[in-house]
Image 1 (cartoon, helix red, strand yellow):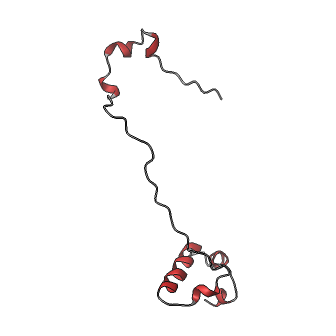
Image 2 (image 1 turned 180 degrees about the vertical axis):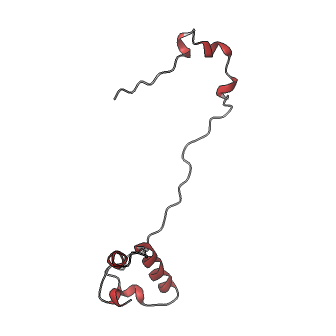
Image 3 (image 1 turned 120 degrees about the vertical axis):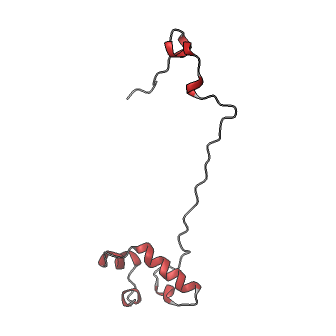
Length: 91
C-alpha cells in the first residue's frame, strides 16, 4: 500500500509485482471502500469501479425451423437451380 500512497496507479503496481493483476488491485480497493476503508482515496482518479457487462443473446430463433437432415433427397442431387449454395464473397 506504500506505492499506492506514493500515487502509483494499480497498473504500475501490477507491473512491478507480476503475480497480481491491476484488476485484482482495483477490486481490493473498491471492496475496502464498501467496508468503510480509505485506500480508494489514494487513487489518482476517483472514478466509478469497472463493471463487467452481461452479454445477452441478441439473435432470435427461427420458429418452425426444419433440420437440414430432414430435407428432400432431390435437394442433395442438386439437379435444380435453387438447390445450389455458394459463397458470394470474393477476397
